[in-house]
Length: 429
Ligand code: SAM
Ligand code: SF4
Image (tube, rainbow, N blue to C red):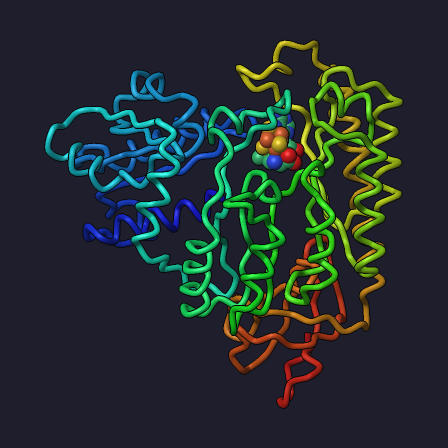
């Protein structure tokens, strides 16, 4: 979502004459768009500011703005601690950035804008074309969260749940497709809680799937509680909806799920997986895991390993529990650091093994790849339907093409192959 937000911040600033630069030393305005989900994010900001100060030592400083969830959470504190920062802008206020920059230039004062103006934000952004021209683009359809899991800062930093209208999303999606997007990933902190004017996520996906030229649709991140039958049915009916679901579970223990305030148990999670597999037999799953949550015993951790083996997630994002100030879990007794780290290492070892076994089975098979970008003169990067990264060599430009690729090799993160349905002789992989 931060990538989407950064692009939209740029769309707003383009209107007042800014352009992007890769060269820090020539910047007039430096924006740090931040994430607050785990600790150390705040320190990273100060570290980056330090780098910038060094770069501009003895020169006129650029305007420095911190946006995103660290800005939302730290606000005034940040402006007080680091005089070099001119403004902090929360994730629901970045549409005001042009005016804020003008105010900084005119009044030379610090500006803290951290209200939850989500409706006004999207009303403003709807008037500014999304200039993203990537083959695979993000599109935010929902923001915020009302679920209040005990470990998570999102409800406090992104604010309450808000869903954009179907018509404004459709308009933005059409612009993205006109710009060259073949794939759109619908984004939301709780994307499957999407609800606007009685239209649910499944309705929205049916509508978007009619856009000519849009070949693939994905959505992330979903909550198990909102994985309703209509959405499960959409996976069966809509061919453009890719057969992979990122469905964070966090733990395999119902006891820990309860302590986390996740609002579902493990049986319910398995039921969703089974229903989806019934409708879409080749569907695959990925997930997020928190290891060493307060109260997690060896038995609870073994339940997580069992879940991993049972579902065979093809990708998993796992982190040791990070106590976030202001959340209920931060007050609980934490699991000893060495125990958490050992469990994380055991978990990741298992998850890698599953990933490698899965990839081994793909050897010599053919996968359908949407090519997104050139990585060097004759290598192209794309993704198969299951979101696996694929690299092939070709002397023709493959960007934006969907082609069958025969898998010849792999490492943990990438599949390597040769094009099997192209009318030219590809280079060897
Ligand atoms: N809304 C989604 C859901 O409910 O699954 C997840 C969104 S959250 C922004 C992304 C991931 O960050 C979570 O799935 C969780 O695994 C991880 N996360 C959030 N807070 C965390 C914490 N305090 N410690 C470790 N990981 C955390
Ligand atoms: Fe955070 Fe997701 Fe829980 Fe909301 S549902 S509080 S975003 S983990």
